[in-house]
Length: 329
Image 1 (tube, rainbow, N blue to C red):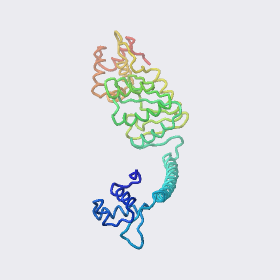
Image 2: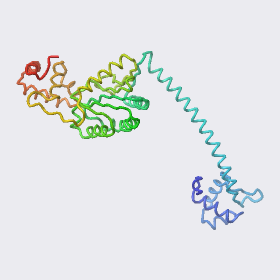
Image 3: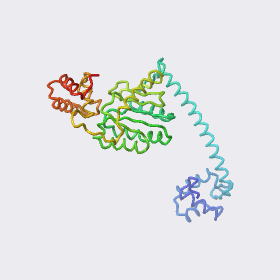
Image 4: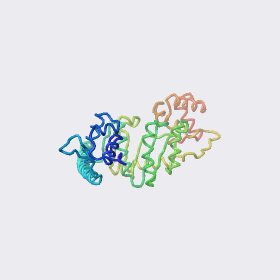
């Protein structure tokens, strides 16, 4: 049990020998224990520092073990003093951290009420980690981009688990294209198995996270989260973002629910492509909204035009409306 005090085997052997053979000399200890003089002296120094042995003043070559009850009590007193010092240091660090956090927050606001700017993925992840720790009842998220990165899912898993363990209502919308990405689809299914509500829809306009309908995190550039994000707490703005999420949620389909393909007409994904074309979006923007590659988006457009027998994108839209596959609005 002496190893609990941080003593190595040599120290323990020396101490036990001195308990049974008091006032042993260095040469006697070396002969009995088979230690080098350096090993023995290092062990004696450590035992002396811990108040477990004493060197009589009249003979510096003779060592005597101190009653363990006395030595251990002295050691406990030393450790308690160290713990008190460490506790004081930790409290000072906590106070400094609180002050720095306050100063940091004030600096980031830069005079804008209800808006905090975050720069880069690391700051975004750190801020979301803090935000999630404070969520009380509801967390909503839009996850565009199709396949999610392994790093993103690894960072999100413990946070999602923490939310669900606290019985927070968690709702996430992915794009339909995750069904073609095994790792992302597996993560979405894991979320659903843990108690989250997960839905998909053909496209999503932006990446968005909303906590308790009071705080939202949105990217500075809609198509590039790595540039930075804004934490928004202004009531009117957050209400509008909640309305956007709720509208998309109503249009989305629960993960795993079978959606029958139309006997004629367009699939939900193809209809979304046509709608985005009608709004004047490029193939690159359509690809990002659907979470697919630009090449795949161009293939979608070509397939739709072929299905409709259209020579142009405008003609494709007009023919889809005429067939009742797409409303004019």
